[in-house]
Image (cartoon, rainbow, N blue to C red; front, side):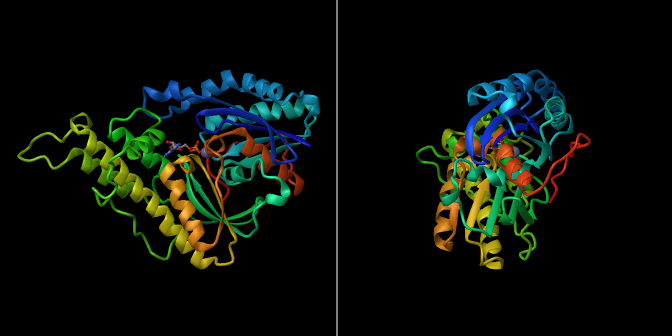
Length: 348
Ligand code: KG4
Ligand code: ZN
């Protein structure tokens, strides 16, 4: 059973062919990083137009790399929520057109839930993690914790009330004068020799201790104040270019420690409430972060959880996770017709 997965929710045009819901036959991602770099953020209108240019070549490459034709496919899966509406429309319209032309079934997939499926790609049935599991999505648009009964049955336990963690990484990187996309560049700076992650005691949000929600706006502000310094006598705030190399490293490392700790704290709380969880599934761009990965490894070890982290190429947006989850949704009886709409928000 071959599934074509299509993803266009933000600034990556992606398509993949997956066999039996887990074996990745091809995964093609056209990134728009260069297009948005000069704006230091994704410009929705430019992103949508670029998807229009790229969507068919990317789908064709995915089919070619998998060594198949459309006639070999059994299902078309598409990320139809959440995301930038003009971007979602492009992938969804392509998927609907292909479904209409071929008669193949169509299934719409929630992009955030698909991130939770990324660690299950390339994992054959006997090596699957045990459920229930805790799920963590840390991406540019979302920061959420889930209880996962099965890949197709997820309940959100908490989410960010303001910025997503990836957004905070990108903003902190911009404040430090690092090029877009900030997250990976900040990760590299914080990992340099001599970086002191205790140089700044950045705040770890303490919103309602009973809640599993996150907040990253305070950390962002604290990072801005650390960069600006404490200007005296009406002097202008310090610019990033005036920071010494060690100050930049220290701010990056201290920011990263606080951001990752905020996640680990809430995960510990989620585990207290869901002690029957056997595994921890993680996805989203920030799961590529080196410190996030190492802290998750020790957290899972301490709490006796079977940690499943995606390989780096499946942390960021891709079509394989869409196809994989789409396969299971379809197996569980879900099919959409051509009235399927793009939706800017996640389903739960
Ligand atoms: O999952 P993703 O590709 O897109 C969304 O669904 O949002 O995540 C992109 C985010 C960006 O904010 C990017 O800076 C961040 O993931 N990211 C990282 C790293 N690699 C990607 N953040 C921190 N450290 C990294 N190594
Ligand atoms: Zn994503």
